[in-house]
Figure 1 (cartoon, rainbow, N blue to C red):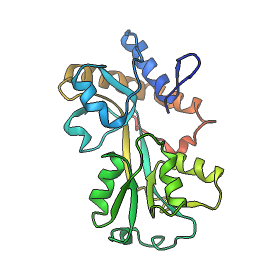
Figure 2 (cartoon, rainbow, N blue to C red):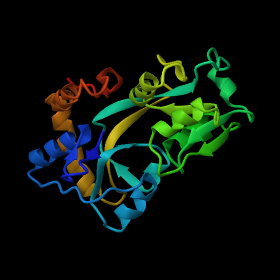
Figure 3 (cartoon, rainbow, N blue to C red):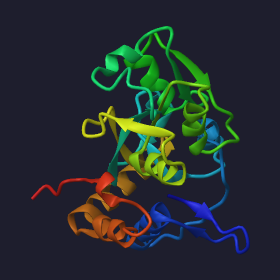
Length: 231
């Protein structure tokens, strides 16, 4: 959803456009300062390395102990991916909650939160922090793990490039629905208030949906759930 052009250094992507529009509405300049690993965000915010994490951040309970989240710009469902020939959980995902089952997660990321809460008996296997989202599904296909979580767009992209390797189960019933937000330090309530006021205006004016529509060719935006207008 956010990427930096390796040649020009220019930031591009869905969340870049959303945040730039927020800056225009607030009449402030957005400076894209640095790339950072997910696990380092709370510490970097506390140290003042940047004011806000603007690449889109899922609001989760554990993250919420150190980060204040803006209102949702839109929501993203999380679904379950397994090997294409693995039918064990097709009719009952509670069977994942077993010590013999392995789940791919990141280093204390949102997926690890979901695994701990929903499937505490299953084993978790951390992927390398240097590897991208696709590594979860590669590890499922290679039988290094049994289960992975992810956004439908990411999983379907992998499936298109690697047919017959993995499948989505219970796709019509998401495991979770996470709000896509801007994250700030937990004590930065004034900044959070500014962001929330702007986001509410963008939602009610239809500006968030307009930006989402502009990315229809790159993403299946049906998997991005809009925030309902209050009127």
